Length: 207
Image (cartoon, rainbow, N blue to C red; front, side):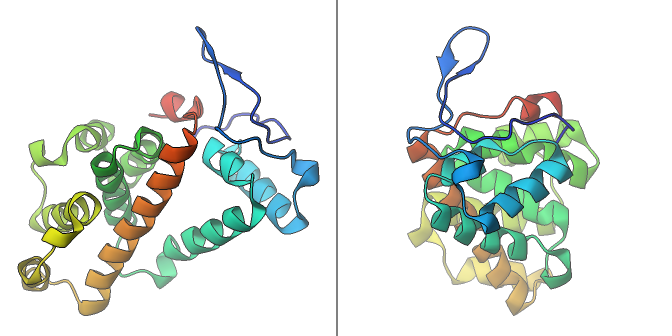
């Protein structure tokens, strides 16, 4: 994400997109001064790292407990020291899952991160449009296909999908982590879609 100055409040006030003013979320969210200290600390840490607080976290702050739960899960899930997957693999799963569920916010959010992890912005953009049209390595193709299945048609996931991953070197813990990352993003996607979270302009500056 680009280093941009963020406002020090989290409200659902309309944001001008150059044509129409659009609300950040369908729910009213509190100002940062109204948030519990633990959540304010997370806002501060994210603002320091990225230069702004993403609208997704702003929207979730309507219920601080929800924001704290999802951020704790997210930060642990994306801790490389605890992962069986590479950063680019996790971002691939995030993007493919978000495309499958139709969550444009999360596609816009993770496309720049995917580009950074891959070191290839064009490839990341192509994956964000349709990973099936991209020539991927067997490992990436297998995990992307499984992520898409789990997000779109979970009952279609079968033993053959697991066998495919095992055959190309995925361990049992790694297979479970692929499912976990995809399921986590499906959860986040559905919250984001229901809240109609407004994509942050920074996603497009850094895309």
